[in-house]
Image 1: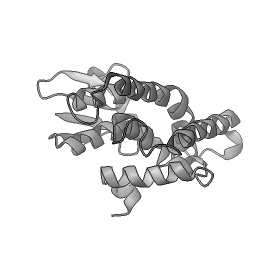
Image 2 (image 1 turned 90 degrees about the vertical axis):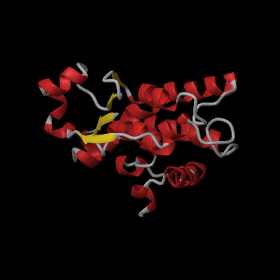
Image 3 (image 1 turned 30 degrees about the vertical axis):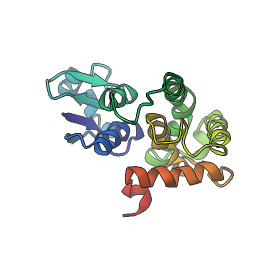
Image 4 (image 1 turned 180 degrees about the horizontal axis):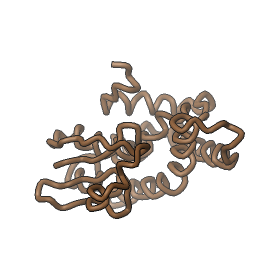
Length: 198
């Protein structure tokens, strides 16, 4: 399997972490999104949407969208709950992540940290929406150690991807102690050297 992605992108790291966690062999192909490498004819042949990540499976089939790739790679593993209700709750978090979390937090990280956009040129609604998302996570994580059930699932991996770097987007995690503890816990489980400093 080949995984095409940017190491700066939480969405790209999600399937990579799943593959590593499950011991699935893969080749990582770094794509520089800021240099326009997702707009080349060769890349557009892989994904006409011009987005990373993209997985080329061992049989040559292609799959895009981070959560779709994660779900495919984790099929039958302990990262997807067997209980139907818990599995549905995992999907609930996956859908929420892409609609209510990532569009605010990831966008601010990209613009503030990577693109160096001045704060006064950013949409102030991004900060408001991002804090609302962090407050929602805090509400859940004050009562549970993981987002679904009693063990790591794809929900945790999906939400961890950008929450771990929320401070780079100008989000202070100080008011969210349960989120901070969860970030540290998931970093250890995923052996995320960027956060653990290893």
